[in-house]
Length: 284
Image 1 (spheres, helix red, strand yellow):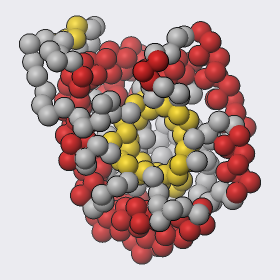
Image 2: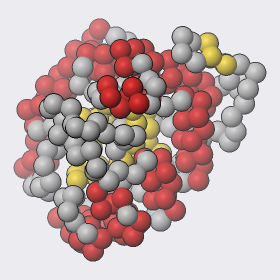
Image 3: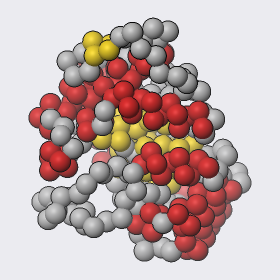
Image 4: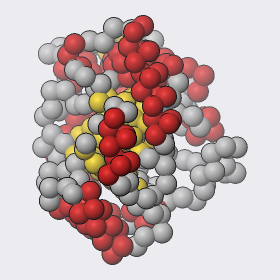
C-alpha cells in the first residue's frame, strides 16, 4: 500500500510556511505523494449537496505543486483532481510538462470532468459537454507530450505544425481519472493509469472497484497502460488502523490518500505528517 496526503493546497496549507513545513515533513516521514485539489472559483451561496464554503482558502493547484516541488526532492506531486474541461489543453500540457521537468519526473496528473456548473460557467467551459471536452483535451495533451510531430484535430482543440519543448521527463506522465459515473469508469479503464475516489468508505470503494471491473468487460484497455491502480481518500480525518488498511487492500486499493484536519496550523501539520508516518510504519 502506498500512502499520500491530500488537501495540501487548502485551508492553512494555503499559507506558504505551513505548506512547506507539511511537505518537508511528509517526505521525511516516508509518504509517497502530495495531492492538491482544484477549484478556480466556488459558488456563493454553495450548491445544494456540496457544502463547500465560498471563502475556503484554496491555492491554484499547479502553482502550489511547483512551490512544493521546490521544498522537496523525492515525494510525488499529484493533482487530485484537475477539472480538465475548464482548462486550456495546450497551456495545461505545457504547465504539466514544465512541472515534471522542474520536479525531475514526479508529477501524477489526476483529472476529472467537474460537477460545479456555476464554476464552469464562470470559466467559460461548456458544462453539458464536459465529458467529451475532457476526452478531446487529454488526447491533445498526449500528442504534445509524445509525438515527434505533434498533431491533433478534435472537436474542441486542433493543431499541427507545432512543438512544445521540453517534453516531460516521465514517458508517460501517469494519468489518474476521478469520478464515479459510468463514463468516468470507462475513461479510467481506457485512458488512465489509475482511478481515484475521494471520500469513500470501504463499502463505497468496493462498489466503485466492482464498477471498474464491469467497465473493463465492456471496453478494451490498452496494454501500455498496465494494471489500473486504485487510489482512495477515506472519509473524515482519522488515520486508518491496520485492519482498515488491510480491508482497503483486500478491496483492491493500491494507495490511500489521507487528510489533515483543516484547522491545523503549521506546527500541527508538521507533527501530523511525522506522527502519521510513524503510525503507518512508513520507511522514513
